[in-house]
Image (cartoon, rainbow, N blue to C red; front, side, top):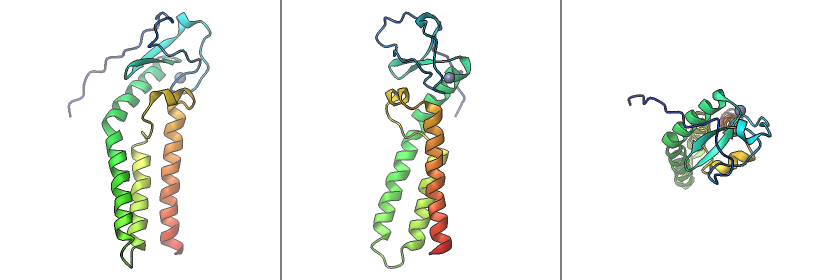
Length: 154
Ligand SMILES: [Zn+2]
């Protein structure tokens, strides 16, 4: 896939009165508190609304996140659906333990590689993008760890 030239859609000087600009006092990416002065805030367009960020590097991180989220979220959901379906099917057979370990490991790996579980950007007002990504990857590693533990001790 050809790499598109990225068009940063934030504007450091935007009026706070426009309703599509989310009035939130923390950076949507790293969670850092933002300036009280609305005129000093930067925003990034996510879907239909503008979310506040603390600076250029977080603005860029959000742009990258939005692009990857749009491209890979379907992989994550499809992967989970198939893993759940596969676990359900193999559980009807007698010797299903190996398959379940494998599918658990695969599901965990999907979370680590595609950490895009959130469908609404409003969620990032309570948990910033950076934290969601870290937590999702930790959950993925824990699931892989469970699969490994099952493999070693059962
Ligand atoms: Zn930030």
